[in-house]
Image (cartoon, rainbow, N blue to C red; front, side):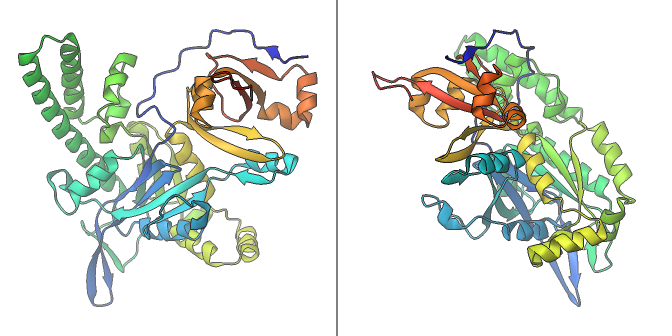
Length: 425
């Protein structure tokens, strides 16, 4: 018997997503500037880290000496060998790591496929941010242009004291650093909007296009919002606004994950004197995810053999934060997985949340989207509970979905399509 067609349900309307509507997204890591004293030598560290998810990039933002380069170097040790990407050059300042997913591992155990293809995270080490970056201070213009090219931000904060590492403001104050960086990003956005308004007003003198009036009104509202010291991503924008907003790729429109770097002792006891103030600030500025971690611990674990690292964590009641950092970054830019699974291959396909079945099929091959017939869908939880595809079908939980179906996280999908008389697949 053919699988049952799903009954159409009127799903509640989701809020439109800020950012490019694509599965090829980028996230980065941002930091600010501090000074490091090494014996009698003073030097400025200005490296940042950019985390990229498959072509989905996260950006690390913050100050040097907050732990960004240590985080990059630790993640680099987990990197996938370059030969796994035969058509892509991996530069010395880039690394790629797998995105951990227990569901993927379970499917591989079930099907024992010839090929296993997981999602991966791409990491870039790039120049850092200083106060005045929006005016070109330090490597500001280059740095801010890199952020514009990504789709989300890892903001690394220093929450540890060390007499050998001196901050530019002579004290450790992560909330002050948060203010510096968020202000720099907003000021760059404000500069962009002022120029955009000027360009639209010039165009309106030469054209009666009604769309220009709509864009001008929105740009003026965005400019006012920024002047009030608010980040664009925190605004209550309408769907029509977001459609225009997404073409601007504003820095303060990008989602943020805050990574709080503390010493191992604080991380172990889950207490840190800076954390309550950071938490309060974040809750007042959007309430996005905060992940405490210890670069010192992660570096030490990466240097140990796997069995020693596991034993050390067990004895000290510790756990690496890297899997959580990677998975939270992935979710922050509204990416989800669907799976194709069978004895030949189990593969994780990354798509933007809210994507419908034909577009999801197109991530496998454009013909799948052009000739889309239907998607045969199993829920991962159903397969795990019932054990086999046959049992899922027998329980009536193997569904046929059409062109309007919005793909859900962890769907296991078999697509049927027909292009120019070619057979179904």
